[in-house]
Image (tube, rainbow, N blue to C red; front, side, top):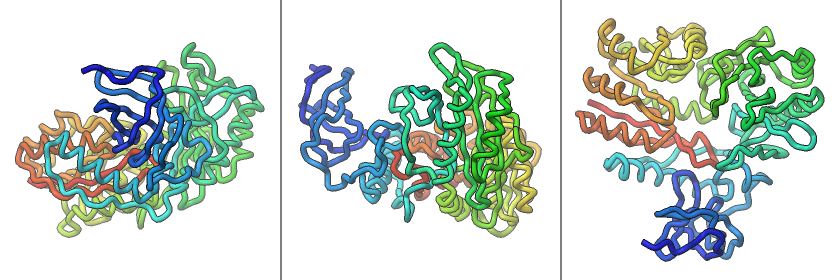
Length: 450
């Protein structure tokens, strides 16, 4: 097939869909053109910036006709920052698209006819993030903080991030100003030089506190004056820590973290449960919607008879602890040692009968079954890449009666659900939960029963 467009060409595209990354999709003489910041119903003049065998990418040069779902973004750098992909789309339309996205993944990738329920969205979809990871760049004033532009490692700064709460925005600007004051060298990933790679800020709404983590390239970096200024100037600061990441890597965190403050954890409340969070621990980034998500998981857990529950990829143990709340026995498996320590702390804090094992889920599950028997329910909450095939094989061999799969990636949960349904499991309704308004991301809770 001849490619009907070429790089540098201006052409008119009617946008009819969205990609799974939230980019507009239209066609030029039947040839797919992906257009960032465009939504279905837009007619745009685009400049083609790249071509492949089956598609091209173009940037909007003129909006010829606006979609009925288009709105003015709240953020002044929404078109340049990689944090949000859909601020220019009405929130109700975002939710409808995300429902379609999930259904399409189950049909196209899993070959499954799933019942995908309407997305559970937010009443107020702003200032919802309790965690921000901000790369460190450099401008004429010294080090600067922002977010990476799409498909690049160029740091885009902003006056205010509308999906972060005011406390995180304020702390970010203070740390940036103090970094300039102390001439802190920004990390240069091309040369693998400089000091500060990322600033990670967490907020705990329940106790109105903040955690600031400085990620350093230098293995033993210390700067007492900078640290003291942060403690003095950042309101609500409870935890200040330094994480050391000396490797050439895109990963934010390294393996070693040292607390500067006496406190090492902040505490967040979800429903009746209290959870301690340390710097490297995984915790859902939207506290309000976390309760909605966890309530969906809990609906699939028997609340009588003390069910035996495995919480695999358990992080700080929050899902299993919330789902059991005294009525079940939980065993969690997590690979990150700090998260396992937090999980044990959380179980004790909430009076839940639980123990936690440090290791890979696919390696520990069979040993657990041999030692303690087959669980009544397995909760799966894997990373975006989904479950390791070995873990699915173990669960199938054990004939676990009920699996509650929590996923932040519709493509991989659809793939894994297809494997399970091919081996005797029935797919229940799929409940999407919008944990990430104004982005292309969506969380799902999926029930699979033997």
